Image (tube, rainbow, N blue to C red):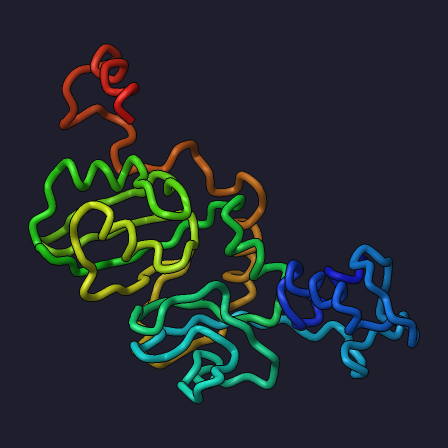
Length: 264
């Protein structure tokens, strides 16, 4: 097994972060500093990080309903509460992606670095569902369609999102990316402001009655579903967007689409 993957399986960090740790010269194999994350190792290779022996540990995945004011990090330099403190486990857990401090809802924690990377990397397109309360409450059809088509942000255009408005001032957005404060910035880009934001689903998982601040360990079957979901192409059925299927609410077929295309 490659050294970077070995460290990720040991719960040290995601594979990408583990490779950076190796490049920094913090990892030894049989007492020798190794800076190549592709070095082949196994459990008998004497891998150590900062002088401490490293070995794969049993993997765990937990679902947490994150309250507001809790940081989505393993530790916080300012002493603020973190998601790791809310999950009972003897393992070194890390959050899978992040929610900003005031965003609530579903976040996963695990010591399986490889699974964490696959669930968050945009190339795998794992969907996340958010429910937002916005102001002004009335959102025009044009603004909704802009979110579905993708909006231009300072770090590039977003992928198309599935969007619906179940009630006045409430949006439900499904995205397959994980940029910093993405949902808030998307809503701002169409002239509105998010005043409350909750993630209600991550892939096939929902909150399932979890109270804020409570967590549960996922079953083997649920973890396997996540692994299958993060396989390349597993969840993609083509372009994501709430307007797929019937051209209901749009004028006109292929000619109308052709007229609109240059404006996008």
